[in-house]
Image 1: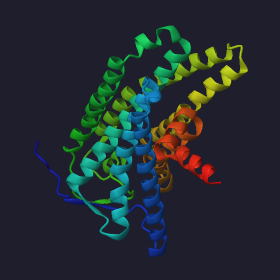
Image 2 (image 1 turned 120 degrees about the horizontal axis):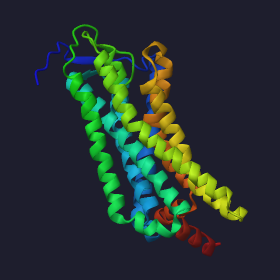
Image 3 (image 1 turned 135 degrees about the vertical axis):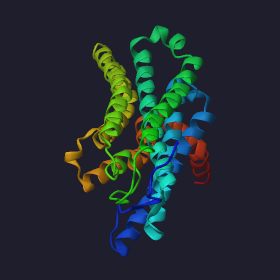
Image 4 (image 1 turned 120 degrees about the vertical axis):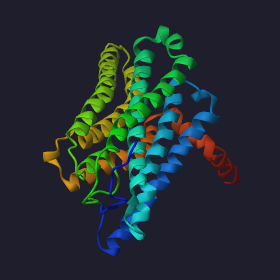
Amino acid sequence: MENQTTVTYFVLLGFSYSPPVQMFLFCTFFLIYAVTLMGNMMIIAAVRSNSHLHSPMYFFLSHLSFIDICTSSVMVPNLLLNFYASKTISYSGCIAQMFFILLTGATEEFILAAMAYDRYTAICKPMYYVKVMNSVVCKSLVGGAWMISCLYALTNALPLLKLLFCGPNTIQHFSCELPSLLALSCTESSQNTMTVFISSCTVAAPLFLVILVSYVHIISTVLKMNSAEARRKTFSTCSSHLIVVILFFGTGGFRYMRPSSASSLFIDDFFSIQYSISTPMLNPIIYSLNTRAVREAIKKLIGCKPLMTHVMQKC
């Protein structure tokens, strides 16, 4: 495919503040990235090492953690580099970053939908759970999520290569997200905008519907339980996932589906940070706090119990 662009690089002007502020932001985002990597790798290791967590629910959770690592790694290292080095990014590097943002974002949506369906089956159809959510189905759901997400990302990335970038190359943002790139095109990009809208609705709307319908049935089933303790445990199991869904779909949907007339640099930065940087960090924290099995597995992994036993024996 012929590349018609005359722009060889873009300038990312997000977070262009005074040196002291940039140093503070660098430390903040570095800490967030470190916590993201450590927390999500700990979730993956805990699920892999603990036989009690070898179930579909935690299988999807470990893949969600892997995607969160990928999402954060697509964004944050380049952002940290921009604080102290050149704020430029090559044309090909910008397109690649945009592609992987779409890929990881869509894959996370699929995994969140799979997790909702898993909880629906476990709570509403417990007699069929083992048969429905077997290992083949779980692996197929994850593999299908990556394949469809890759197709979605290509659907939006390839038409972008046909656009001409001939003049302004300054992006008023900290990353190469699709809406920011379309705004810089010298040629008509309404078709690309329509492609983004249609493809996003085609992917996100059915997945959000699966999540919504699953939780309507889950809540209905839980409210019919006679035991208050059973209701509490069931809601506790689902609350972590529901919080993550609201954070991710709410902020990501606003960033990509809002009309261009409602654009605001501050709001765009805020929502981009929330779904692509903050949410990957918060996910392992949310699941660790709200899910006792995960919390206990992490304690066992890092040796908290043996350490406490040793301290008590010394005392």
